[in-house]
Length: 473
Picture 1 (cartoon, one colour):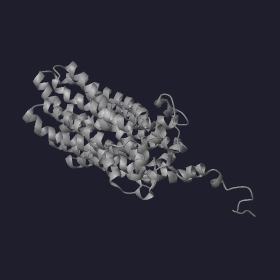
Picture 2 (cartoon, rainbow, N blue to C red):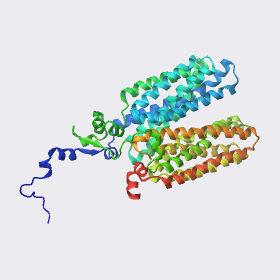
Picture 3 (spheres, helix red, strand yellow):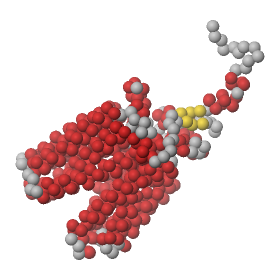
Picture 4 (cartoon, rainbow, N blue to C red):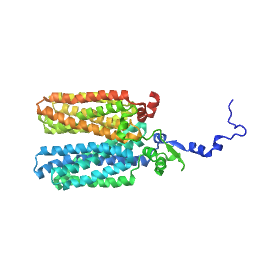
């Protein structure tokens, strides 16, 4: 029979090695701190600051769209000549997503966000000084690098601090900041451009980004998970842990650990190692296909519907479609409850109202607007849900890279969607067929989501939900 009384001449472990006992006693898994964090101003402030990044990104990303008519009129150019400028912006956005994502996994989320915000703020402010399309393209490309980098980094940072059971909801709520910046910027531009000219929107966007950068510099924390992996001796770890869980009263000598290991090499290559290849491939396919439909409708819906139901009703249909993004939080909440399979159903169901738009136009404006709203709920809400998943299924050391790469891949679909619509319109395709073809990528995205759910790794399951991982693996 065992006993706790030490044998003669033999001391207990904690008496023989007090420093070892102290280390064991004061070692804390940071994942448990995050999972059991308490409500505090620290997490509220973090969310607000990340939302500020999204808002600034949303406004500056759409600034050229608002200013384009004024630029065309002042410079006396054909509107078709603005197409290369828009395309250069998209390329810059894609490049920024990847470059800043990999940089963030090297230097930290906080530094990457500050650098991206400074970059797009400075070059947005410089756009009014452009005198021709070449200068405008260069300045917009540089600004787009920062715009593309800021948003995925904000998503990665908030993910590192979110409880596993609420990550999807918090990430999708964060996207409301981007929606507010892009749509609110349009309302603001409508007021200031007629009064002060097209340059005013860039002055405002650039100055706003600089102010946001100052606020972020003063208050934005670094990812506590990143610090433990890359700089475990940092005093900020203890400070952040105490803010996350004040009642724990962590001692000064507390050592925080994480059940991960940092890796060396090019971060993007790790997206295809340790069993992640299939998972990454199907995530990218799902995002690419869904964004084809997203931008197909976002850029061409008003034009396609105007001849059928009039410009006013077509514009209302477009607005109702965009309104769907405001309900993306529901999909984040469902992802937290049911996992990736929610997206499979969402993508497949999303194809139905998109295809129905081609039939609804023949019945009048009311049904068309109703189908546009349902399409927006499923297509835009589903897109944001997929973006949330991209930051939820990868470990800390490549989370920024994974999120940024996913954003970049999605932009490929964003380019192909409007291009496909333009080709179909040019060859005289009937409107019913156009919307039917626009719906097909959603079905392909649904298949990709189904395969994503089948190929998700045990590690990814743990990242999404600790409880579900323990029960499934």
